[in-house]
Amino acid sequence: MKLLLCVFFCLSVPVIPYAEMDKHNGYINSLIFTPDGKNIISGSWDTTIRLWELSHHLETTVLDGHTLSVNDIVLSPTDEILASASWDRTIRLWNYKDGTELVQLRGHEDAVYGIDFSPDGKSLVSASWDYTLKIWDIETRRVAQTLRGHRANVMAVQYSPSGSTILSASYDGTIRKWDAVNGNMLSILKGHTNSVNDVSHIPNSSNAISASTDHTVRIWSLDGGKELAKLTSHKSFVTSVVVSSDGKYALSGDGKGNAILWDLSLLDAIYTLKAHEGAIWAVAFSPDKQNLVTGGADNIIRQWDFKTGKQILR
Image (cartoon, rainbow, N blue to C red; front, side, top):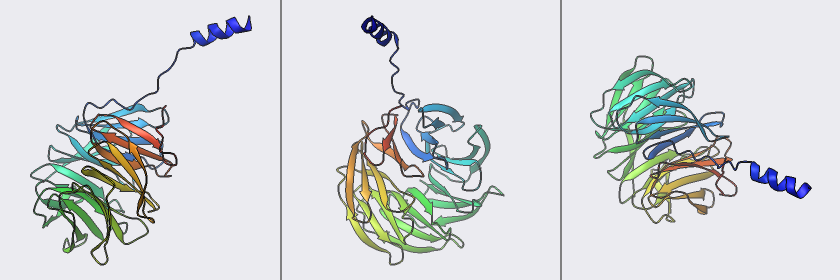
């Protein structure tokens, strides 16, 4: 009797498949965590921005307004404002919790590819395919400065943790360091042999890390302006790189759908994730470093356990 009941019960309970974060209809270009680590926000080629509850992989909010691909997204460190950069040449500010568009910033003459808030939240820097960077005053919504020097599309940009300097990466194969106050170019980092697609400061150090179409990830001294290391485990163009909040690890994605977790003290790969079909365009660490997320040309976002490298299914 017990056996019959067990068989009936087991057959009667529906099998609930795990939920993939797959609502986008285009490449995943950008991924960030909310400060509490409970949600991620994604920007896509399909022109939308989506908020996801990570515990169940459920889409909760869609921000719709851009008319072309959303290339980058970033959260203000001081409030609930999200900024987005797009092929439509605009930067848009949103209340990301309720999906309200607050304002559009216009001034670039070509696609806006990268953006970042200053640590105090008072300024925003943008990188464009018009070869320039612009620093925006968030209060007035106006351009405070335009930074010129790159000789090709500017792909990525980031404020230093202190907010005193800015790093930019470009198709021209260089990384440039700028004074965030007066806009002067301070140094040019050369070594990559092809486009530099991403750049990030390494917390708790005076170093930076970059990703390039030349298949390498490189580490740089920002004080001396010299290359410190070249990491060569990728077998395809490297699209993106991020650093953990403690500065000990980096995660990079490439054109073959692989993501590599790096130990920055040993300058060696810990493991490689066979993460996506097609290129990975976005990677991110959770604030507590327990989770990784990747987004790719297969239009899917995937969550991974930091310690084991195994996919987390909900």
